[in-house]
Length: 262
Image (cartoon, rainbow, N blue to C red):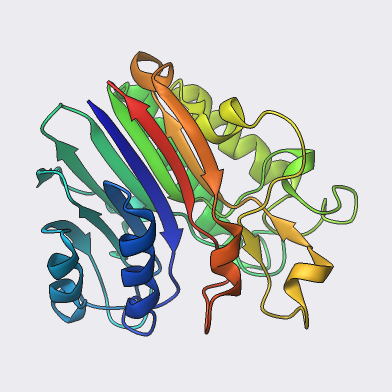
């Protein structure tokens, strides 16, 4: 069975439902995972996506913040979610395909602006969230699983436009990079994107603050696709749809794709 998974922080699914529909029609991923939906589930325009062929949907939402959804052309059952750090926010949901693959969709907290948990509760929340992810995967080793989402960390030096300049900037600080590495190691996850594209600068996010984001190209790879060892060897065809960052009224993130042959 061949299928393609995409992940995209959409930054309001209702505001950008047209862009989601455009992606679904033009790129036709079998599974699309969305983060930062900013909508209760009942107000997500699911009918729009179902009309395009994405009839299987699992989601968790809340008004105005966070929110994760999985849209699938393939039959998919709800595989639950976890409430990390006990905040009751919608940052994780899982769906299971008929071939037994579980897709985990994550939206890791951004962490605020100051990389110090003593003065910035948001940064502490992010680190605690990552610690709970690590402990979960360490206690219950994932199998036949794909983890995707906005993990809000660019781990490699070539995942950011300037490694030295961003060492003290949230999303690329050593403490965050180390925490993400511990999550990855605990679940024996393979970074599918970098397995397929091992060399060179690679970004999935560009700030709205740049007057010309494309020319400045000060990006970061915050969005990830991982897989467990039992299926990572079947992954291929990874890519980032940079062009989507330039669509009208875009998200500041671009979709990330990976294909699997199982």
